[in-house]
Image (cartoon, rainbow, N blue to C red; front, side, top):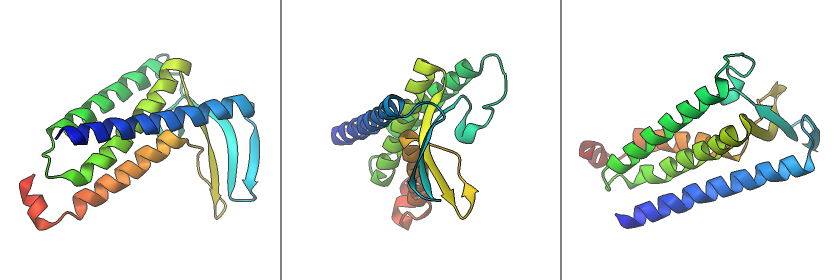
Length: 164
């Protein structure tokens, strides 16, 4: 039981560390709103800021309390996810890794919101002429964690489904 918490903390810390280090590197090497083409027509490094939520939702809105709103929502989400993580039975090992990714990523973005009032994004992809909104390592960890969590919950063995 204690081992799962050590692994959880290690993964969260690793995600936060890599996320913050890459954001720092982008800030130091790439001026705001600058783009460097890495793979022509597919991948760019672009230093942008996101004042809104996921995919820039509410980013252009002047809510008057936007950074506080997103900080509070982030804290509620992180607290809720951590509570669920603690309450899950130890037999459901499949969800521990995804929860670590999601919470680590959420904390990484929360650090930016508290420190800057916005999130630093820099990974910029174009896929078949579709320009995906820029994102960061924390966003990647959250997305991968959600996908793995969904997969783990949907495709559990029947014996695991009865235990929850």
